[in-house]
Image (cartoon, rainbow, N blue to C red; front, side, top):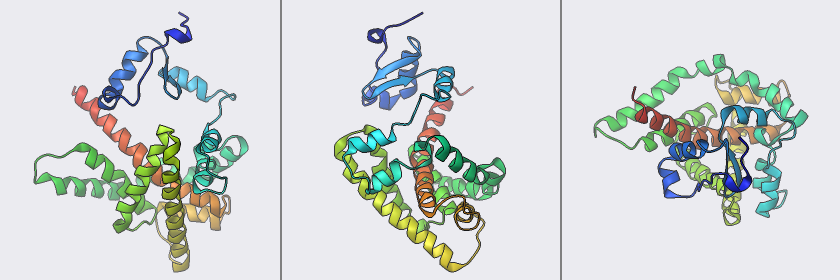
Amino acid sequence: MPISESELPEIDIFSDDFSRDPIAIMQQARDKSWVAKFSMGHAVLDFAAMKDILSDPRVRTPNKDITAMSGLPEVSAFARFNNHFLLALEGDDHDRMRKAVSSAFTPRAANKHRPFMRETINGILDDRAASGQCDFVDIASQYPITVMCRLLGVDAGDIPDFEAWLEAIGEAFALSPEVYQKIDSALENMFDYAEQVIEARLDSGEIYDDLLQSLLELATVEKVITREELLVLVLNLLSAGYDTTKNQLILCMKVLLDRPD
């Protein structure tokens, strides 16, 4: 049954209720419509509708619009990242990058790292076992960034720095102009750090069995991506391997707690 714009449900993503239980708020809206309004536009709430929209060639990413809204120059670290990471690319550029890196992200490639991933989560749980309780958000925050940093050659002692930078970058989702300078500074630090990691790996001449090595070979041996694309990809993986994964783990745990059966 058709529904007018004025009748669409509204979601306040900055409310305490949404922070406390976003799944319940989404479901309340979904009961009324497959799409809802929120402060930045519209949220699609139906899986089939989302698939249709994502496959529609008229749909494009808003990254360059967001960069323009930030007021930061094209040479800024924010523009350098936000306009060029994989999800921001479209058309031939997106297809080329996706094809180039797909071999590094197959199930077989991921399975090589399962032992380390299990070792990491077991170590995190062991550290908290003595107290008999913990905040799951703490575990969900520490686990993915520890794994991703290891796979990308980041020293474990530097993880707190990355957590601070990535928390700053996460504020971009607020689309608030006053946070963009802070985000730009964090990205500048991450670009500098990634450059140093890559240079150190190349200077060592050693061949490692990790994700960074696979990506390096795409840029230096196969030459299907550029050095700049490699840097942006490393930053993309670090940010996706922290905030996105952390939030997904937290939401998965909530669903399991709500549905113990």
